[in-house]
Image 1 (cartoon, rainbow, N blue to C red):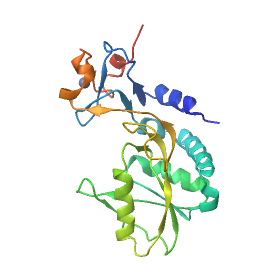
Image 2 (cartoon, rainbow, N blue to C red):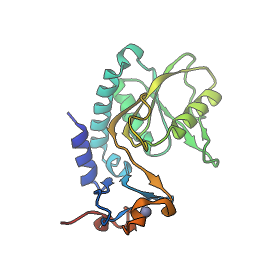
Image 3 (cartoon, rainbow, N blue to C red):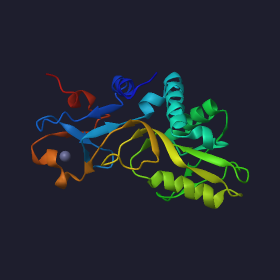
Image 4 (tube, helix red, strand yellow):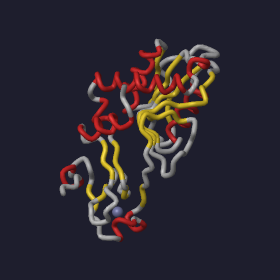
Length: 213
Ligand SMILES: [Zn+2]
C-alpha cells in the first residue's frame, strides 16, 4: 500500500519534491515562471517510470473508491496535456474504462478536445497529475463540454497525485494522494528573500536546495 509518506519518499528519491525547511537561512525555490516558492513538485520525474505510474494509479483508484466511485462508476477517464496523459491512461486501465485527453492550444487557458468522441450520456472522471488551482480542470471540462459532439456527465470529484493549494483543505472534490499547502509569490513580496534566503531553480540546482547539516 502506497501511503502519502511513502509517495513523498519516492518523489524525494526522484528529485521530484522539495520543501523549504522553515529555517529562513536555508535556500528556497524559484519556479519556472519566476515566482518564489516554499516547495517544488515535478511529477514527470516520477511518472517516467511506468511501474511507479501504475502503482500510483492503483493507489489513487483505492482513494477514489473511498470517495464513492463505486456508486458513480465512470465510462471514461479524461486527462489533460501533457504530464497527466500517461497517468490518466493508467487510471483508466485500472478502472477498465476508456481514456481520452484534452490538448493544449495556442491560447494559454484554452484546451482542445477533437481526437475522439465520447458517446452521449457517458459518465466522465477527470484525472490530473498535479493540481494547484482548478484552472486546468475547468479548461478540460470546458473543452469536452463544448467540443465533444454529444453531452456527457462529469463526476463531481477529480483525481490527482498531488494537490498543492495555497491553503488546505482547499477544494473538497479533489481526491489526491498527496496534499501539501504550497505558497508561490513574486520576489518582491517573498518573505524568504526578505530574510536573506537565496533562491534557486530546483531542476538545475538540486544540491544547493538540499540542506546538509
Ligand atoms: Zn524569494
